[in-house]
Length: 117
Length: 107
Image (cartoon, rainbow over all chains, first blue to last red; front, side, top):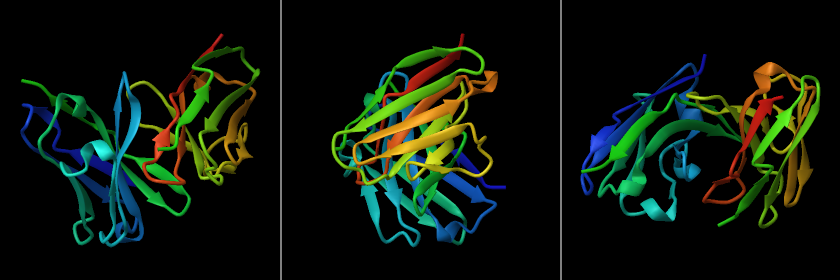
């Protein structure tokens, strides 16, 4: 069974950092691209970043470029999202998602990030 | 960025009724279109990918169609468990973008 389990969320002050982790199991992690997607009641779903199977290619939405870094450790079956210089507008539930071929098919349960003083 | 305009924003359907939800892309997305269902407090579940391919385990009453800029999700025979929010996602070009969502309720 495919499982994606996020961790590392919480309350953080504006300008500070947080690192999210996503532990994967039930599939060959290194065969799949991975992504982070966030959701808020007001903005809905927003794709944040993606990383290729080997980690050599990364992609970001403009609003997080230069502040967020997506990475992965295929030996640990884990992907990460390092979030620096956090802003109030980064407050959201963050989902880890798997993608391969034509589909983004499995999502984690989500982790809440709140940026507030 | 590719804009995804989803309609309607909300919908109420009777048991057994056929329901359609639309997504209009601001440019050709070459069928890189997926549909998801999300229930309160849960993560999105993939229903349809590549515009018309049914994800394994999804009931056959769900179907997708479309090409170019226009896509639709059809539920042939509304069931109580189909209540929830539905989203489209375009994966043709970064940044991937989502439709605004449709809240589907049982009448």
